[in-house]
Image 1: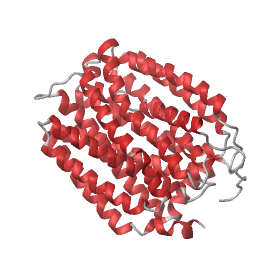
Image 2 (image 1 turned 90 degrees about the vertical axis):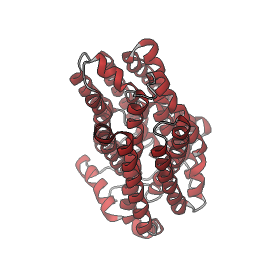
Image 3 (image 1 turned 90 degrees about the horizontal axis):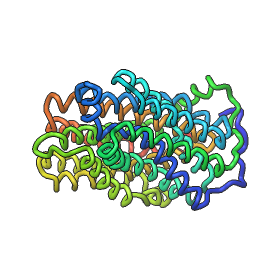
Image 4 (image 1 turned 180 degrees about the vertical axis):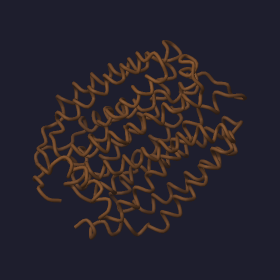
Length: 403
């Protein structure tokens, strides 16, 4: 990459900063998922169908993919000490707009704004990679990435419990307040980091596509990442419909508690970044996809069994957490100077996959119920295993291609 500026060597990650990054990143990405266990009650309150309400998840993810593509590359061009808190404050304003939305159309518009602006977590993660040493980058990025996935899972539990007590609008209002507080903490804690490149903004965006075109290992990882997020979003969006309907007929609070089950799986996979540090990233990725396939088989058998559903959730979230950490850390190892842009490519493709998965959930549920959903998950998992098998040598060529 041309016009690069040297990385400062004095700032380093501490345990406290790592923890704050994990919490802030988790809170940021949680904003994308507050609606997921609330689709039924939002639909009733705003006089819309459940299928229409399901577009709330898709609209957020589409907005997020666009925001990541257009904003996250700025992390390579601007001081993140100011950029990250600024984006969090804009996100807080969008969350407040969601809380006040009087119609489904306006809520959809506001929630796209949430997606566009709540990208701070994806600027924080490459910053953590920059501040980490080569020896502990996998561990630190894994910890911060665990915060993001934990935020996704906890958001379902928190939103369900809060909505049962105080209504769904309170969920978004409270989230706005939390984001403002975290923005203030991050402004005080993030070290000033000079820009790593001075190339103009249009060239910066184009360079995202250039690095994808240049390195085959990036393209391989992007396909696996997008497929993973598609099956993850497919499962959790459809699970809301399953648990809301007979024979379960659970309330939003109970549905939200299933997020805690997934959280147990996410915590279990937290140290998977160490596998990258030890050189086991590629085989561990294949094992993760085999586990995802097994989770969907269990889910297919558990359409009326809470026990089998719980087993499927734990297995799916352990595997998805490990897969996400390994893939993201592997991508970060390609180039220090382009780390924010590499993360842009990774997260944008992920959330395009996630938007497709959540859209598929509504269509598949309406046409074939839980059986159709789980069969689609099985098919996507088999596809990912084929991609992994064909391209598993790609990451071994990272250093040569990126040089």
